[in-house]
Every structure is written in structure tokens, then in C-alpha cells.
Image (tube, rainbow, N blue to C red; front, side, top):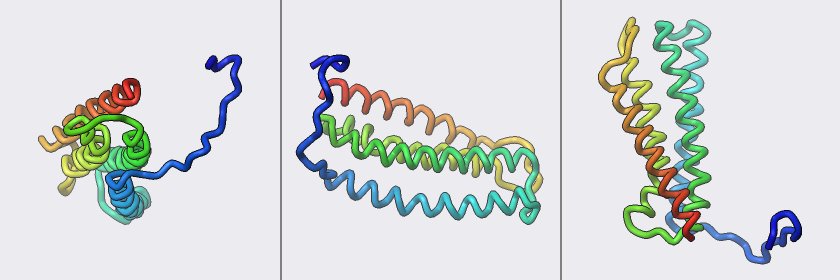
Length: 149
């Protein structure tokens, strides 16, 4: 089939999530509520109702944005992981790695900027880099799994 000459066909089957994807997706959707409450805290910072340095405000924004985007990406990964033939550690990496990165990276931004008057990150910034490495490994695993399915 050529993408340029053959019209696309409609699938006649209904996609069903695997048990693992359904469970993980449910957890991720509930976790998105915590991002919403984090957004309320960010509004307080911006309005001056919660004390924060300029550095802390920037890290709160970065943590909030990373949490939301990565949780949504983790939801998408559930559907895609069901389309691979991966098993074992690669399956876990493809299905759950982005979700774990969605905890590590924002956690690094939040925890490394905690404390009154802080103007630079603590050593907990390492969580951001650990999450970034896990995110990259997960996306590579899922991409390779899709290409070889």
C-alpha cells in the first residue's frame, strides 16, 4: 500500500486497552487532579499570596508544566505500548517509564527549590536529570517496540 496512491481504510475492530494500560491510565487520570491543585498553588505564588523568590516561582512553573505534559504523554504511551510485542523490562519501560519520569522531574523542580528565601536549587535537582534519562530511555524503548511490532 502506498500512502500517496491508496486511500486509507477504516479499522473495523474496536481497540480495547489491556488490563495494564487500563489500570495505569486510571491512576494517571487521578494523578492529574494533583497537577490541578498544584496549579492553584502556582496562582497563589503569582498573585503574591504565597511567599516565593523569583527562582522558586520559575521552578514551580517548570515543575507544574512538566507534571502536566508528562502525565498526558504517559497516557498516550499506554495505548501505544499495547501495540508492541514487548515483554518483561522493556514492556515496563515503554508502559511505565514516562509515568515515573512524570514524578521524578517535577519532584526535582519542587523539592530542590523548597525552603524560605531559596535562590538556587539543592542537590535534589538530580531528580530532574534522573527523570530526563528515564524519559529518554522509555521513549526510545517504546519507539523501537512500535517499529519492530
